[in-house]
Amino acid sequence: MPSSFCSAVWNAGAWGTPICLAAAIWRNFEAVAGTLAKALICEKPPRRAPAGLALDCCDGCLSCRKIDSATHPDVLWVRPESKLRVITIDQMRELMQTVHLKPAEAAFKVAVIVAADRLNVQAANAFSKNPRRTAGGFDIDFAVH
Picture (cartoon, rainbow, N blue to C red):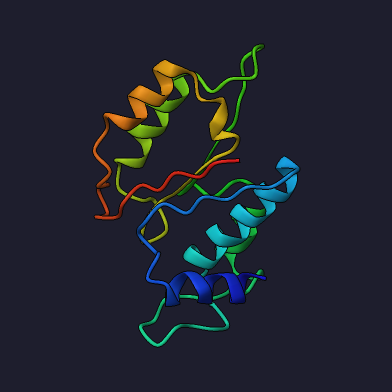
């Protein structure tokens, strides 16, 4: 799946633009988002596009293993955490602060917002008012469940 999806995104010129994913089950979405994060950050990708962008992940390098165990410092996950199952303004402010710092290990950071439809109004406004250019010079993308 990662190779064909990444190839399609690359051929469409869609890297650096928002990629919107939808899945019936959150776990499916999170698995796809995790695979995309690994393809972007993998140290030893088995396939690359002509311009050098990774089209797949190796699943064996330290970065891939850290992403699988949710310990990679440059892959950030935001999920609904409050009792109301919404993503709060505090969560979004923390994410925006973190993504604007330089990456710790990878060339750039990847942020995944799980169930972005659960952003409350204040969180959505805080996100929309932040600049999309990060310290590494990459655009911030928005993922929706």
